Image 1: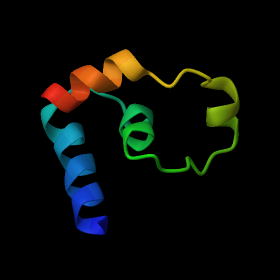
Image 2 (image 1 turned 30 degrees about the vertical axis):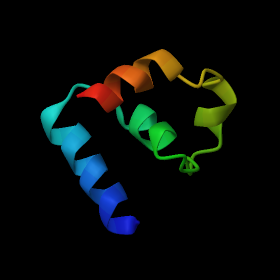
Image 3 (image 1 turned 180 degrees about the vertical axis):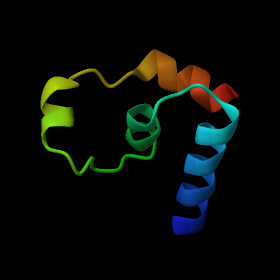
Length: 54
């Protein structure tokens, strides 16, 4: 599983314009900075759907 997560992060960083927060959200990872999830209440479902089609 870690290999997939790492590959997905690398791909989205190198080949797309999606931000890291959205990538982590798509992978269902906890974001280490507690302030980010406190202010980012959206699950970005529609944007993640587009990301998974790329």
